[in-house]
Amino acid sequence: MSDLQRSIAVLYRRKGKETLTEREFVFSASMDLRWFSPKDAQKLLDAGIAGGYLRKIEGNLLPTFDFGEIEVPIDYRPTPEMLKETIRRPQKDLFSEIIDTISRSKSVSKREVVSRVNKKQEMLGIDVEPAALLVACDYGIDVDGAYIDRAASEVLSREFHGC
Image 1 (cartoon, rainbow, N blue to C red):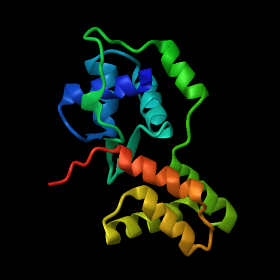
Image 2 (cartoon, rainbow, N blue to C red; image 1 turned 135 degrees about the horizontal axis):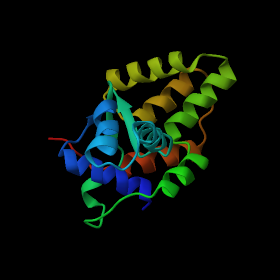
Image 3 (cartoon, one colour; image 1 turned 45 degrees about the vertical axis):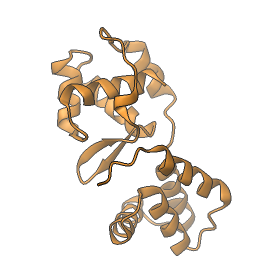
């Protein structure tokens, strides 16, 4: 578990919500908790997305992990070094990797690809990673077992929040 993941967990627990808007996220990290300046709080948000810990859905930010299961000390406060380290080595999540692959290999804008993924996801009622893989197949891109295994792992690692 990383400091980035702990920071995100604290923000969501403090708000008591499953989703936050970008504004709520940045405001909470900067003004409520006084961890960072608004500019650095935005960098925290961007690092959370790049690291695969946050996902944007219909204008809201949703954690990709169960933030209730993360152990965080009561007096937890992220260090400025954590933010610098996170920004230096952002991890690319599977969804972004698939979008980049489609966009590069088929000379299609990322916006168009994401739009198609969103439509596929909504139409089939599935997670974003399998929807992205299906769109890659629609474009004629061979999705090997590694992509499929990673998508299955990501989907199965999320706690089911259904009925």
